[in-house]
Length: 218
Image (cartoon, rainbow, N blue to C red):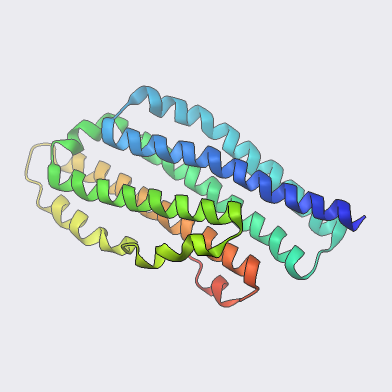
């Protein structure tokens, strides 16, 4: 019986990998939309989000079923609880990519202001790196994959210059650019935060060190 339970646990973790691949596709799409303003891609992202939502629902239900039926303890319990926390963050990342997609119609306006666009490009690259590192660590169960996150530019480094460039806008489209740039920037910033939630929940799952729970944000 317990062998079957552990196979279910392993399958849960594998399904998180599948979900993370879907979310990574949506994240890549968000970056592309933020650069190109591709409205057709934005539309496809909105449709694809239904699959992410469906996985979130089914995996949550499976986790609850395992908790009730098996009453796991120790590492098994940490794994099930980690899966529940991680899929919540992945689902939220998917939602945030749609916020970016919804700004597709204003990307050309943002790109007319190179200083604003440059900060957003740096932030996007930073967030992609965070997500990819965390996804690789989850897949391999190897915390070494997270080692270089300590040397990654902190997310709060991007807020002040973005705000400064936005407040310096003096063109006729300044208000519209400011709103769109803020939405895009804030969305990617929160995606970065949720990536770190996944990282810290994985650290807790593998080590049992409760201090990693205190480090979670989002």
